[in-house]
Image (cartoon, rainbow, N blue to C red; front, top):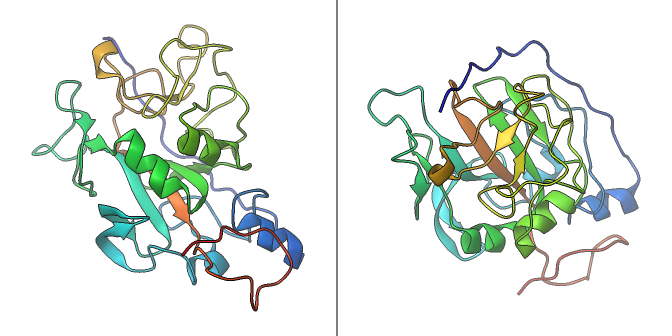
Length: 242
């Protein structure tokens, strides 16, 4: 499988803010994207949500009943990791597979059932390549696809970074149907478009281009805290758990 190289990051993006309490409540379940003056990159976090969300501490822990989920301490749960920067544990198309425990030295992705369970309490998806390039979902469609067994090929919207370009997805993909195969660009016309698929049978690792990745790639779910009662909550729509 002939694959090219990825591009080094060229910029960081600032985001707009939404201040309405009602909009902030909606954002807790991903109905409206709440972007609060943050920048892209591995430290991307939405502070107001992270303070009360799951994954507030770093390390392996149980999230939404799923054990051995790596949390970054900033409210994000790791569900996929391609490690190609470490010679000892580097991913290849023969070693990349579904795993039951995932960390920053891992090569693999969580099962679709585990991802669906974790996504129940997630507000959005963050995709990363290397150390400085990130995009995130800007509607609830991406999280809903993970919950319900769909893909990101159509109907989802994302922030923009030139190193993670989602603008030229195929109108239909036989591969990108459900987790871990989520979206595929037109590789012939747009070889630098994102190819977020993990179909090792077809020679794919989750990559920011049509080529095999030359930098680590990661998929995170940004977690929100489930509430157990409406008492004391501001007006809005919440996931009620417990």
